[in-house]
Length: 379
Ligand SMILES: *Cc1c(COP(=O)(O)O)cnc(C)c1O
Image (tube, rainbow, N blue to C red; front, top):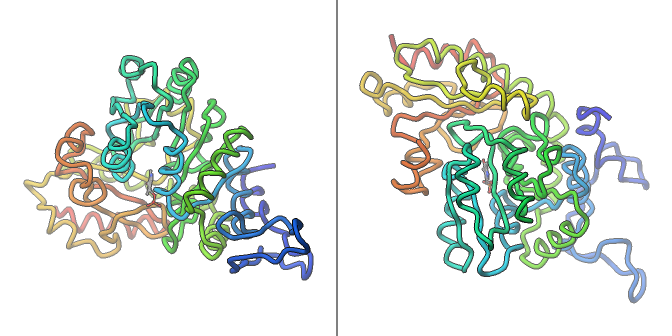
């Protein structure tokens, strides 16, 4: 079935008592046993809940996975995947990954006997060089945040497979509508459902999607043991939002392309990063592994001509805020906001500068959005 059909219908038709079209919320912590040793599939909500299970079915169907675990946040999903490792294990990842992921790796797990190599993921040779006998996981984000560097999924997942390491892809930026890492052999796909999957900026959540039953069992064990599963209310909200993912992604992309094209021609903009522009240097890879370009873009602002504070202050429609993937357009300064936790060293390695501005294109009128940018950039 088409992804638009799966998005709307998977995880619904769960109420056989009243035939409600919408999957009910089961806000219960516990479930009554029929008799000793016999229940109806659920015993305690941390371990399993029908509303959460419906969402997990939906997300797994969108990614083409076998199953999924919905977690309280995206970071909860990422931390859970790291718990699959043993002390002494080694991870290879990019130096321009999501700021919170970088912090979790460097300031939490690196202090607990997991070691990390942060490399240029666009260079398979650099990855190969960084791999050690104890490398058990390659952590991939593509496109990268916020500079939209594309990582070759087939090549990098191949490197992981050669060494029997897991290939994990954070697919938050493009969503399964525009990129499906399982088609390239990924072992696990993670999401911050806070972003495009929910799409309405009213919930935080995450997901771990797997397509191997044994790995899935492990993931479920850790989600339950760590207690990071998503609340039924939040799961219900994400299930409501995810139904319009295809239509929203098309709208985000249309606006992002128009905004990027406008910025590219503006004299006070030094450089624009967007996968949908012909100026993006990785055209072949984009065509090979992406079904679209998404709604995220970034640019280098000429801050000598337009001071940052004034630029952001002049914005009327774009809201100065972290996060992304909601229907409203957001704008932010990675250096001091979303990526500040990387520290000066991490920021420098990633290529983010004080002039980098990131946009999450919403679904408002593109003419209104461009007029807002035009005004803030000045003549
Ligand atoms: C936001 C984000 C996360 C973290 O998700 P939370 O829901 O904020 O915990 C992880 N990866 C990427 C790419 C993100 O954008």
